[in-house]
Image (cartoon, rainbow, N blue to C red; front, side, top):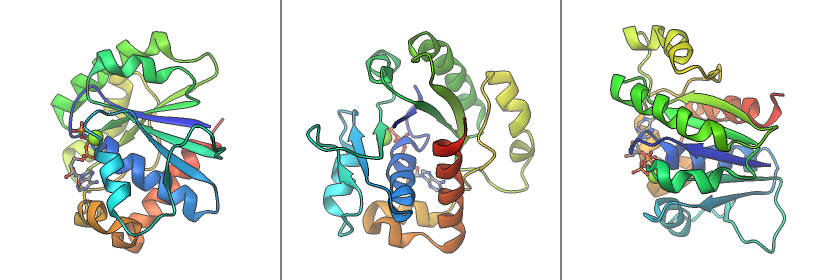
Length: 188
Ligand SMILES: Nc1ncnc2c1ncn2[C@@H]1O[C@H](COP(=O)(O)OP(=O)(O)OP(=O)(O)O)[C@@H](O)[C@H]1O
Ligand SMILES: [Mg+2]
């Protein structure tokens, strides 16, 4: 199964979610790889530098239970990556600018989504008990895409994960990741 993480806007957390969701599924015993389709190569650098080798960079000669695909923040280069994905996850932080670009991204990718694939929003960087966090169902409705019921909150440990990997995550962050990845891989 190929899981594409995308958004036409930079800095929404695509790479962070790609690597950590992949780790969460690998922790659950699956063979998982990350395919880095972003020329910035952030996911590649991340996985090459951390000690933990639970998640590999994708090699086309190998078989995996799931491949998490990181993508660049440009719509033009995004569309070729969509072919063959089972789930496309729009990583979106609940700020107005992110919401608008998520709308644009949705319009741009919908025509390219494979017939049986799913499109979902993953809200990332959410601050609990804020007005925007309460508005998430309404924001998803405006974008016209079903959100995952798991929301990823803003936590410093997600930033530390780029240096130390999965072990940087505290229990609450791990639980968010497990719940989100379970929804992504099991929902029909
Ligand atoms: N839930 C979160 N809590 C705190 N910081 C976060 C969270 N998600 C991402 N970040 C931080 O936000 C920054 C941008 O994240 P990331 O590089 O994953 O975004 P991106 O969408 O891949 O960016 P680009 O479009 O440039 O590839 C990083 O510093 C990352 O550590
Ligand atoms: Mg990135």
